Length: 547
Image 1 (cartoon, rainbow, N blue to C red):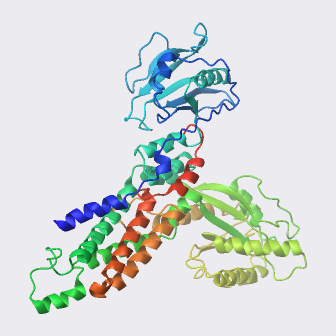
Image 2 (cartoon, rainbow, N blue to C red):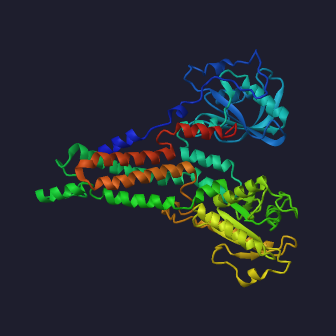
Image 3 (cartoon, rainbow, N blue to C red):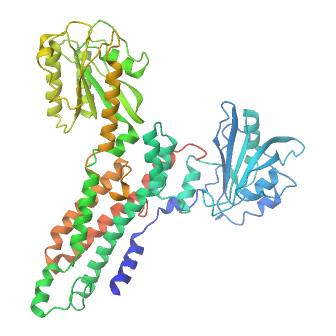
């Protein structure tokens, strides 16, 4: 019984909150963003009565879809806060609030000039706490012309206690009211910026709370082990510990049990650590989906790198010239290959000797790009022997950078010209796991086949992603951001120390318990159960106005 109570107590102690974000942003600052503020602002007595004290959060508004910069068919204006309902009634004089969550056609009027209509719009009312922010929330779906949107925003800005929202403030309020945790907030941010199908799927999985369930399951196991350790510290061997694990023992057996006072806790923690380490060996699959898989084209000057770059990008993104050394810097474009976002990089030609300092710097950057890429396209002129030496140089440089499991594809360009005997006699397919391909950038021969293979290779990298096989997360990556990986890695290191300390018996129980607490705290920082104020400050700032 004590252990159960201890677990509940320790859980309550461990669960912190990001207080600065759970205290709603009530700075009182007005932001009009080009909307003129009137000295004689309209002030509704009905609305002013709603503001009882400074502790009442301000009502915020913003355009969440459609902008004042260019016309659109429909613009969506969101209003959230305690004055949302009264404000909507004031915009629709003589009308009651619409039924919750039912779109209703209303004529909007500025209370300072009710004779002139602003627009005919669809309005929706979401009473709290059943809303995105957890507060009373109104959505106004108006026509998207600049005149309509600015007129509506001007009317909203005239209400006392109502101001323009800060970037990400709607989502900040959703987090503050417990509608979203930190992982879901990040998932929402990723969904809003998703460019490809795979990015959308990963973001939706995170927003749905699938990752939160796994991290919280891990954390609850650590808290249970921590509670057991605290019980051992408080009661030692005066009472039975974990009756499921330790039965009544005689004195000799109890002395032996002192060396194994953890019961089956150690075994559970070892299993948990193994699962966490398996997720860390996912080859950064989640980060690659979010940020884009990096593909670097490297090779000798005039091998056709820029021509291939343009062909894959389907645009004239790089200058193509017969003059060697035309490309001096790393150029890049974003591609969608099989639903995966890819960052394709064209690099400077690599050769053994040059006196041009700028070209030397370009080669250094080319090799750095190859070392940091997830997939390298080694491109050579198949009619020239020089390319073989360049490929060897690139591979040697990658070895120096200690790049492991680097995906390599060899592209033999200029198939329209006689092939050099070197490439006819030997094709180093054993080195290039991604295969060897013959193409001609001049005629287009083989490029479609190569593009299909490149797409298959890219989707294969994302789908394999290492050894991650969590049943709870079989459809996607567990770790989607660098900060997640850092916290999981720190937790694993704490569990490694716990296992060493747990073998030392009673003398190190308190130290072992501290390692379990640290590991649980690290996992809590991922979901926001433990304070993540700095992370949230940056994250909400990255949101657009209106979200």
